[in-house]
Length: 191
Image (tube, rainbow, N blue to C red; front, side):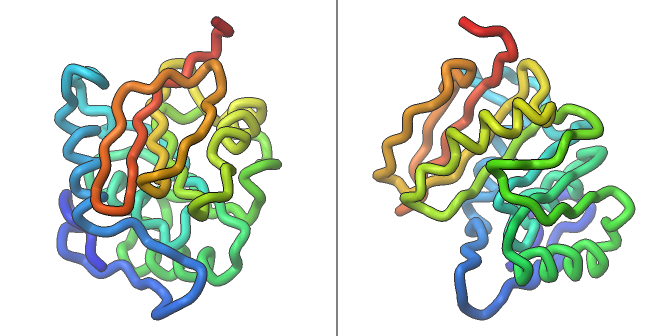
């Protein structure tokens, strides 16, 4: 697995050979970041990555965070409860020389620590069919991680149907094989 673009393009992201960690496929990551960096009529035409602070929740190997940092994100926080995942994330951060732009946190997505600063970009890749994404978004927002107007990118199985919090507006959904990517806009104002 490799970083698909930016100044770390082509560099390897290590992943465990088997187990519970399911890294986002390269072609899906590239499609997600092409949308985030170049925009479209659904999410707006600005670059949502460059200069952003982001959080990668259920981060696994940290692939989404590394992709964002490679494309100009300012800072990434990675949260996971899996010790093996966090070990791989730390190793990858060191190998890619990105440790100084990252914070790696061992925590449940449902009870995250308070944020130091809110993030304009949120990635969630929970285990499929667990319905963890909606409550994780609520918990992250309550802990101050999600900035008003943030773009939230959620990876699920193509056939999962979730009920999103009222503050999350679906901007776009795209299917890539057995994966569905949902782009949400988060509002801190209740509607």
